[in-house]
Image (cartoon, rainbow, N blue to C red; front, side, top):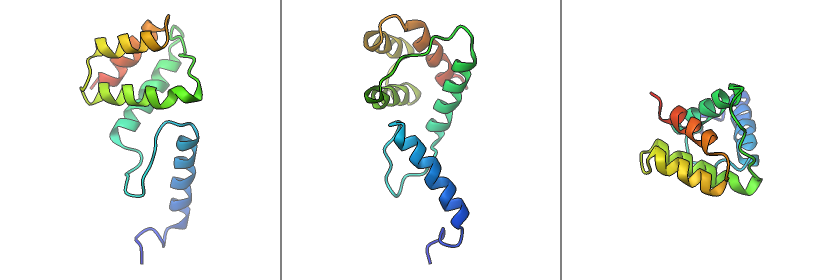
Length: 111
């Protein structure tokens, strides 16, 4: 017996949560992928904190931008790019939103 077969409510909750994230285009999943990952928890927290800031200017992303944004955030979090590169990439993709990317960079890299 698979270890999750006896826990249908938990499986259903995980499936609903995963479907919501996938529908938003923020991640692609495989059966072996643990969800949410530490990065995804940090990203969710950073976005929540930024949106709670009255001075934060929400970045107008189309659905097609979600994967790009996710990949950029993950590259910053994994230290594959610097904050400066993250902000520059964001400003290039979304001119006028440099401050928004700078705030997200600070939140994503905060301990």
